[in-house]
Image 1 (tube, one colour):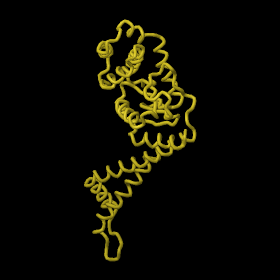
Image 2: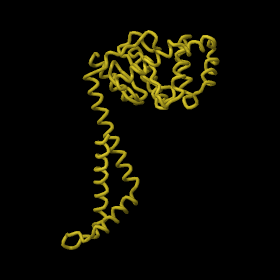
Image 3: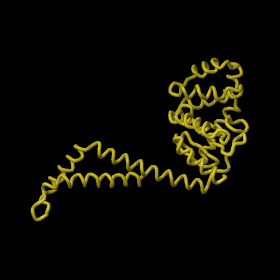
Length: 257
């Protein structure tokens, strides 16, 4: 992060300097020497910043975007060289897609996370594009500062006990900004779940332990942000677009991994 910050500060400084030099052009004497003093130079630089806020902001954003892309590229190459192979899909993990798929995507997510809602849409695009080749496996990683994430995870796994996980999953993400106990009950009733079993399951030690174990599993591999994905062990962090997933999947398929 420090490298990115220092990098765009230097880059922005170059832009400001170039703009300031243009403004200073009128201060150059016939002999080519600059006849401006330090105070005047400071004023010119201030005016450049004041008159060109969008230029400077766009320059910073473009540089940060470039640095982020380069960092992602390095992380991806490192992951291809050292994939995570000790995390597997368990029978109790909800899944969809081709059962014997060449590509398994393990997703760690949080029902209260807005980026995870975005990630759901992309993953659905991936499943459609690579139908028959990709399997999606769901795991929970409720973040500590999302107070409704754990009860939402428990409720979703309780719905899974009645064969309604993905329906409940989709409804939770459609309402991710207003999760609460009343909503959990309403969604279960809307899906015509056995409410007595639903309440018993979501408060059971079995489901509580599963959520905690999956959270610890993500933490053990530093998958702290949500959503995070393992694509045949290759790490994808954040709600990346379809193109990014395709780059990883196409490479895996071409390499036969």
